[in-house]
Image (cartoon, rainbow, N blue to C red; front, side):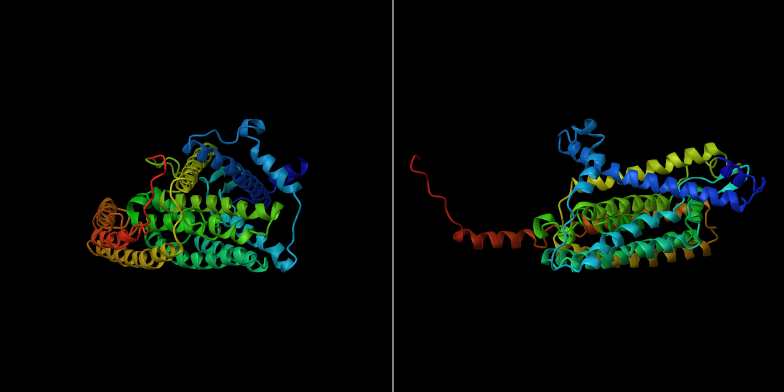
Length: 427
């Protein structure tokens, strides 16, 4: 306690915190975020089981501490299990692959603001671990490294199923990473900056981007499912086809690291969706939390608001997993390249044209007519895309490409060749 008090006395009551207090708060935020992040990933495994049980009308885990201690039981089991190493595997890369998959999932959270600043007596503390100016680009760059862990795991295992899972993951990540990155360009056009705090502020004093950029949110949401390898995009695992895919040969904690990385990626993507399209930590319908003085109460309330938004998207991830079936691989590729990518490119052009047009008409960015024009355009785009053009045929790639006449023709051709069931002797 003496050392902490000495650090607090280094800085005076100024707007900018002194180095001692800044360093202390950085360490506190680092420990707090890492602890909550890892505990959250563990509890998400319990939440996934409970939500799936609720959807399927069953109990779920209810034995170990009435189910609440199930994540601890899973962790103990993975720690005491035997580590297996395939004889033909490339052992250094085989051991390194889970770490390469886990670290980017953990580090990407560092630049996401999770609450309003706190105005302490020693200075204003930003509620973000690393408020770098290029925060959003940092997330895109670092999150793309996670695919290397999956590819290395598939290749180093020297297993054909694991290799197929790694190849699938590479193609899937490349296909949907482009659409995901392009879906965020309209967000940057409105914010005029790549700093996540600036994007939150732009939505706080205007309108949430989910209303201004609805199609961009839809593209980002679908691409996020593909980037996190969640159903209906879990082709790299595909238990019914590839045993367990890229981690077929893994066991114990190395096996668990892949799933921890998956849940960490879910948390990061959910936080990113909340930040880019739902105002981040901003409390809706009020500017009280965005203006000085920056009190501790504002920090706590905005933290609760941000956590609520993140939990909503985490629930959405689990809801979709236990509701929709897995795509075929050709459907996955067709959706990414033939629909998502052209739609993202067209939407960038349309949004940029609309922004320039509204500006030329004298509607300042951030004004009510400006946001009203964007909302009306997105409403028309949603109606045209989902209710007129699509109607369940394009966005749902599992639908048949044949019309009713062709299906009836195929049935008529195959009818004479169908085996007939002979009546049983008792009939």
